[in-house]
Image (tube, rainbow, N blue to C red; front, side):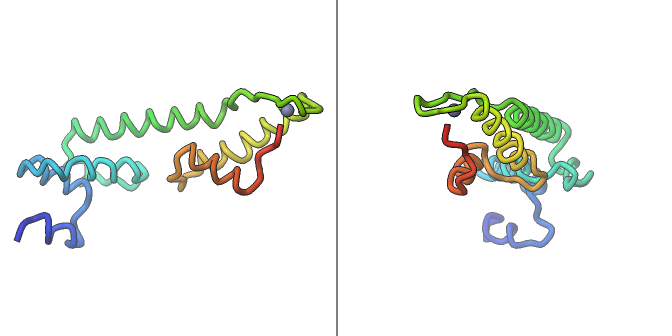
Length: 136
Ligand SMILES: [Zn+2]
């Protein structure tokens, strides 16, 4: 029986353990999915044991990438996308205020939510469906 079959069912099998075993036994197809799983995991849920399993370089790269993603999200949430008014827009000032309100109160709030796991595009799509977006 290969480790691919039985290990993922073991209760102590974590993504960090998967990275350790991928490195130790050259299980190349294990590293990328494990790293992707760790990217989605909140940083505070990673333990010292996880860091030890991953090794200092992998742990550093994981934290660095998570910080870059967070910086990018903060930038996206804070600075509204430029608005383009249609010919039918009757009040560009009011329309722009609505847009900024939507951006910060709808999109930005969801993007920065601690449990958010949606991409910015998925959030926009959800908000479009809920008719939150101003028609400007
Ligand atoms: Zn407008």
